[in-house]
Image (cartoon, rainbow, N blue to C red; front, side, top):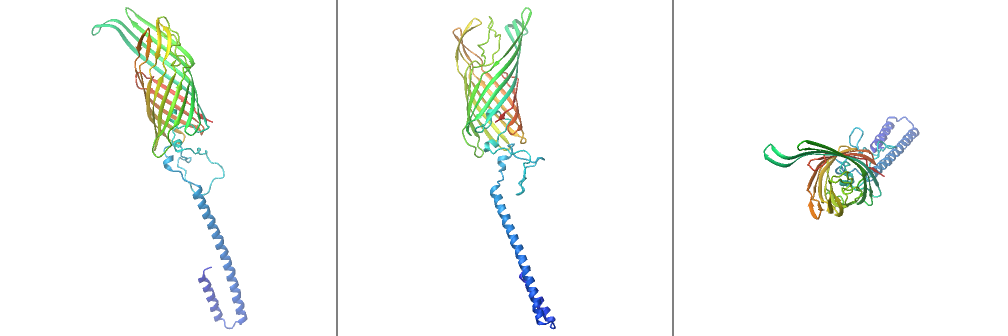
Amino acid sequence: MPASWVKKTAASIAIASALTPWVPAAAQTANIADELRALREELKRQQSMIDQQSAQIEAQQEQIEALKTGLSVPDLSELRGTGLAQTTPTGQPTVFAGPQMPDSPVGEAPPEPEAEVKAAQVEAIPQEQGVLTRPGRIVFEPSLEYTRSSTNRLVFRGIELVPGIQIGVIEASDADRDTVVGTFAGRYGLTSRLEIEGRIPYLYRYDRIEVAQQRDESIVRTIELREKDIGDAEVGIRYQLNSPRGQRPIWVASLRLKSNTGKGPFDVDYDEFGVATGLATGSGFWALQPGISFLLPSDPVVIYGGASYLYHMPEDVNRTVGGAFIGRVDPGDAISANIGFGFALNPRFSYSMGYRHAYLFKTKTEIGGTTQFGNIAQVGSLNLGMSYRLTPKQSINLGFEIGVTSDSPDISITLKIPTSF
């Protein structure tokens, strides 16, 4: 109770005593004693209230200090543009409003804490460009791929006397090739920087080739070939070279070994003219492919890229095809590189765009004691991808590869459903 109020009360009592001189002294003393007792009770009550308020202030201060040490607001630079930021049902970002917390879970559980590079991952980018699998986790990734390739060629064998007058054979060919590949693939994270993977493809091929020749009369021949068999199995290993730091890219080295489990081009049958009567489902040669790739988070996108070298191991075929003996064959190696970016529109959906180009060297083939060289090839394609996260452990990815050079397939469509365990 304020001291000024006590002083005023005492003064009032003194004045009242002075104005009533006729009241006996004993009665005056009793009244003063009653007033003092009332004042003491009021002081005790006020002091009790002050003590309670002080205790409440101390308890609230302890709660504030606990919240300061227990809660940490995430750095926005780590969350923006990564597709992993938590939002409200209306699309607004989550705000930490105070110490009150819900008694039961609300909405979806937040993603498990991972390294900064994992927070920057965009699912839509190619798998070989993404971050590594977490230690001890298995990712099963079945996929289905459809490829369409067609060629139209017009060849003139002969001489041209004057423009418009030709003596010889005109040959036109129209080839349409369809390939469907079902792949069973899996990845396993050995450590936070190392993972292994394996792939087993199964192919179905259908080729339709129509050849038209113009000599003395027109000759049209149609060839239809079908084949289904296992393809070339692969195993690979990927290792992250550096840790994420600032705006530096994450570098990942890889090594892939491709087998010859599929039916090779020299394993199919040929007729007496050297024309294949079957289709290959593999290259027929072992191959080793080292490579390096990078992943660079750059708000609000993720930039990726890489390069690799495919080395084919030469083999002795030692087979007669169309009356010619085929000896040692050295398939052309290949250099490839790609670049692109991925963008997450929300925590579930992301897309990517990129370009891939490969340069294939000439193939060396021993035919009848002489060495024949094939043609080089330039394979360029524009890549588009999109991804939708179904659950925290499963997503669906759809990719399109559109050929932009004459040696490239027309279109390739790939559907993947990676699931982690």
